[in-house]
Image (cartoon, rainbow, N blue to C red; front, side):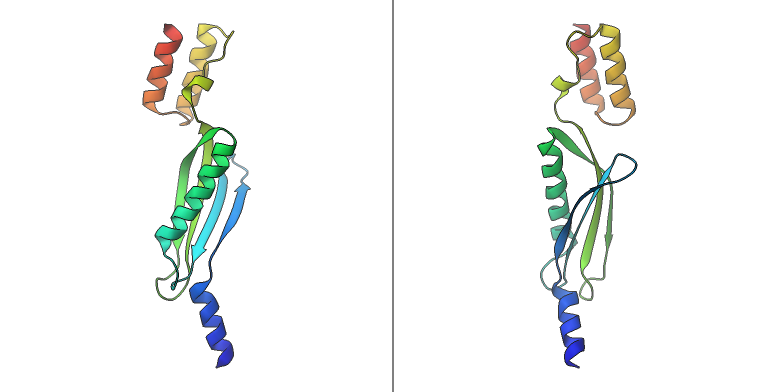
Length: 132
């Protein structure tokens, strides 16, 4: 009975975050979980998100979510969030390469847009800058 109570306590209050790990497809993953007594999926998601953002910001890039998965049973098991993300260029100023031709810069911007690393607005802004 005592062992069961200890195990149940560990399951309900267990929490933690796994460090950022690089995946084979040039994305990263980070996981976080909180027990039923001291957290929730939202708390686990915020912690995983904060760690992913800090990781990308340290690289002077912006965090872009690729996928988020949540599991666990509320009130019974820890709520866990697995976040898959990538880091993309943080500022659009980094996109244009000084000394490159207009055509090279346009190709670079198009490639970033096609890979989903910059938004449509960023793409249009960069094309305007390049052509001016």
